[in-house]
Image (cartoon, rainbow, N blue to C red; front, side, top):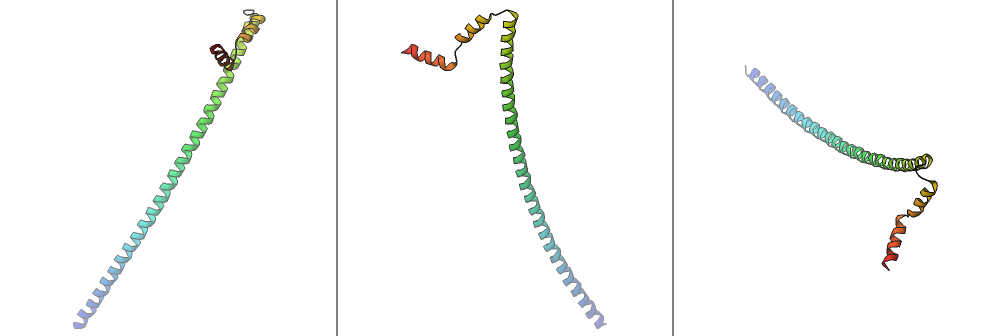
Length: 122
């Protein structure tokens, strides 16, 4: 009977030792898994932040380009509209060609106004 007790005792010690090693191995694997997941998460977060910043900057750049093009187009359209209205007024006889030329000569650029104001002040 002693040999059975001794055999079972040795088996029990072996099982306990194996369980402790397994536990330590599982804990080590869990720690490494956690580290790996955290690393991937941080890299993914960094990549997402960089990606969002890039998209935001490109969107801002494109919005500025569209805005500039819209302003330029509106300026060109308004200039053509004014010219078209002037031509229509002259062609319909509402305004004489001589009157239009006289009005154009009377209208001076902004720089001429500022020079005139300086000369008047002297």
